[in-house]
Image (tube, rainbow, N blue to C red; front, side, top):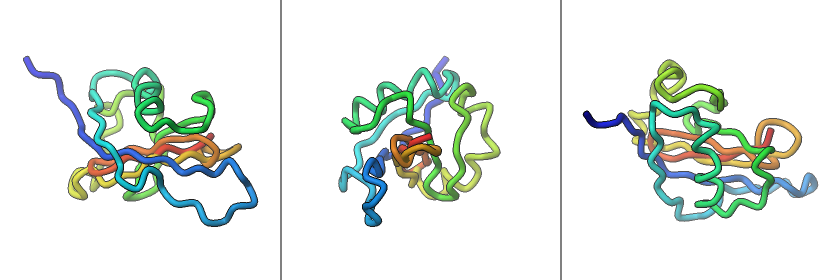
Amino acid sequence: MATATLVCRVQFLDDTDPFNSTNFPEPTRPPLYTFREDIPLATQLPAVHRLLRAPHKLDDCTLQLSHNGTYLDLESTLAEQRDELEGFQEDFCSGIAGMKQGQALRRSSETVSAKDVKVTDQ
């Protein structure tokens, strides 16, 4: 029996400098990452963080959907958060992984999308 997966492009926002108002998703050519829908996102986040070589602390990261800005619950699986993913897969995983500081991944958080994934800070 095959395991359900979600293949997405992932990026992060380097907002470690609170005075920099021009944060763009990095890398400019986002890599693909395959998320398993049956494993909690917190278990998968370290691999995304390594893949992106994000400058943020892993503890400061979270996942945010790029198509609607929704933050995903890291303690839950993607299968448990299907409602939040609505519209994401139509965008062909177009989320962006973004990092944010002090809040949810501006400093270091990650976002997931059916097309792309974003990492953001908490």
